[in-house]
Image (cartoon, rainbow, N blue to C red; front, side):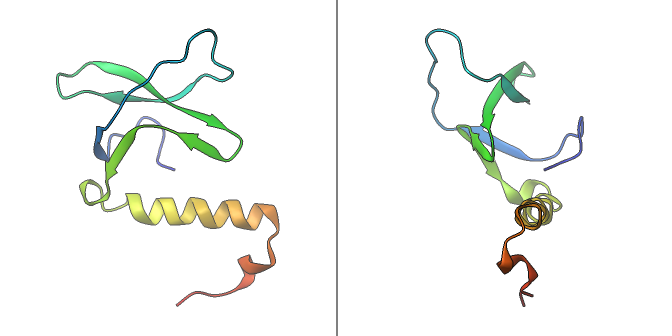
Length: 88
């Protein structure tokens, strides 16, 4: 959704849990805590992203348009008939 390696959105970690045993997929991004530590976060399987991170969209003005653009690209790639509709 964003540019690789680019700092941007702020947020907070609302909950946490642990997977016992081996995860079926690897973590898909890293976050930096308020103390400066890096941690692995998020799992992605297909088109699903699982994470406890709650983003503050106002922290990066480009985040919302990037999210909408990623959704539109995904929809076009699936060939949905609704992708050709124009939205106001």
